[in-house]
Image (cartoon, each protein chain N blue to C red):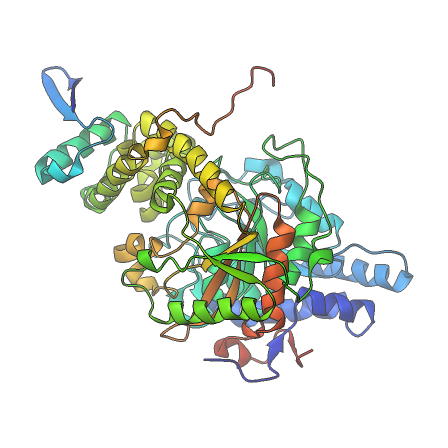
Length: 480
Length: 85
């Protein structure tokens, strides 16, 4: 199920080139974003709040900045969506929950939002999530249900759902997601876009409603790895408000990009041994992607991720325990107001003990040492992002746990390494599949370089879902 | 296994860590679940309780997995506390 040639959407990189050349204006980009939201939001559940007026006002200012000839920011004039567990000045943060205190965050910009705004980004609105960035939709609650642009009966993945389907629908060109166990990479894979969780500590997460304190990451989602590099260059860096951030130098990640992978050693683990009842197309698509890397000059090394199930289990225990510490008092008094998946997921934390939690942290350390040893022999590791396509929304309540086991994300939250998902083709039902690219701690440049090189020889990231391509709005432009 | 008194006159068996789920009967598991949820102060509907039985099994399997890692026996946890803010 590939889109028709020529019907491709603008990337951030394309848009910046066009803006600098005077071929498009910020206002026209924002008006197209608004038109796309008008066309698709009601069906796809992209937004919880739209900031059309303030974003348009910022777009006029961006055009004035370009016209002045003065230096502009790296994202000036680009419409961006913000997952609604991250605070911004435009409105309250809901966490898509009836329980959350919407005054939380004092309606200030989180550091990441302030950084995007300082880079000239246009904040187009707050996007849908799963309640408190966990679980699956609850159709009984008064919130939009995010749907997959490739088939509206299917889920977007979560929890950065609205940022995922919003990019795919052209409602904005990039946006912020958060990732505690795959919540950037899963919706990126399921919606056919790109998304990166940088190294833990690389991007400040203050101003974001916490889920798992030692696992949470904020990161960019956009059409391409290059777009993620542009956004991450603006987002990364120490901030005193988040003591987990580190004072590592932040490079311009776009400078590392280039198609040649000569000299790069890539470890390959298909994770097929954990793909029971998975999508049969995943192995073939993964193999093709790996072959592309070899053709680009990389040296392939078969590897097996150490302590895979154990570290994933440790991440699961950690996530549940840290989330329950935050929610325990509200769950005692407002149980029924939570989504069913939050109740049954976060509420199951008491089934693990304090000792389980501490042991999980010991296993994370064991895993860190083992993966560091593996990374002494390779520069990058590739795995499928998930061994499944996006499940149907109707199936989630019954089978989400089984499906979640087919998403190969949480291991890297447990270890803190940077991990990128880029599209690698389609599954049995014609829904997008993702390729996961993982690097050493703080080597986001290496990860993005490999993702970008792959996208220089493939077009999956530029495909547009037929539902969107059939509409007359959005960022439709001829292929560059 | 350990025994705790959850209310006057009622003793309940709780799983030690790790729990031996394979030998736990359904009735015992449900008793353990109710005790743990009660201790956490959670009033759970029957529908949610049924939905959480799978979570209980997964949680205890995860505990077994992390305690099965021999290399973690003398490992320091990946947690930091500093006396100075």
